[in-house]
Image (tube, rainbow over all chains, first blue to last red; front, side, top):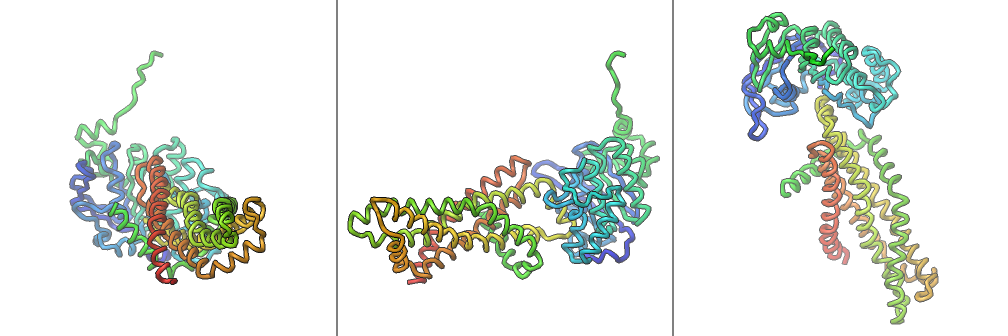
Length: 254
Length: 248
């Protein structure tokens, strides 16, 4: 993988004819879309529509049955391509290493790849944790943190890589509204600061319409609409309208 | 089953190829090594003492009755160093350390920590498997040497204190020294080294293939321990045959 100090412009992502089945269950049924460099691209859709599986394909954790994924025009099926571009993923659960402290989690990438001296790693870890509002947590264990803090640590861990492409899997799920706003702001700030290409999978409408440059709506493994937030809001597809306007009606007597 | 064996052999081979990187992972090797020793030393001490004691108790009166009291030390010494210490310690370590390895790697698998490592381009084999296999391969033979010494001591105590045997410490160890050679001890140590590789490989493999949440972790731990013990017992027979031919 590259030195983290090199060019930090976002990369483009192209998904071409992506199919994936698990046994008889078809999860992705021919997905095609492009993400531009530096764009915040949100993939929305109901639970079980294949969003997270798509993300796992883009980061190279799952091989597709058919189709391909290109980063800056190069297929990630060639293993060296994912090594060439700095990519990071913020997992839904945070996926922090429970046996390591918060600081060790954040600095792991630099330490394992021997990219910086221990003193520099400590400085970078402190800087990244401060950047996500988690000063003085470096010595804590992940088990001592709340769900929102864990997600912010996961973002700090991803930032250490100085990614050109960052993938977020349900970044605001299981969070209270205030923490969800903090995470959304972090995503936006990050994009403005380092122009990283951000691909977010979520069914959080507030997050999607708050941060996205473009939104894709996915249902049953197929993309049913792609457009700017305004275009998606005005889209005539009844499923999209239902998804966007689903609301809880209070049936209890006053 | 054959797929599992094939995968384990590939894992072991890839670990062998990664051995030159051990120095880079030395901190984790030392941590694991300390963990293995710390977790097992007291248990090994107790187990070995009583194994030595019970062997002396079983063989001593029978031999003394047949006027073969001078053979007690030799029989206890040989059986402990060539067979009982390596096999029993390997089984104990499979239960204590192998299960912990499978559980830790398995939970990392289930809770996406291994996926996170892969997204950071950190090689799971170098980071998780190599330090564990190296640590257990060094620790188990050392623990077995300790176990042999404690086992002999246990045998000697029973031989000296049991009225049906009544052999002095000095007589017991003199006979033991006449019968047991250095190559017998090395035989046991070599076996334990092979058992350590089996435990490390089986447990790490089971951890890496864990699927299906907490229940999956439980299944992996059970499989790691059971498969390790089965392979230890089977390989013990073949190793014994090979070593008997080699050390004639």
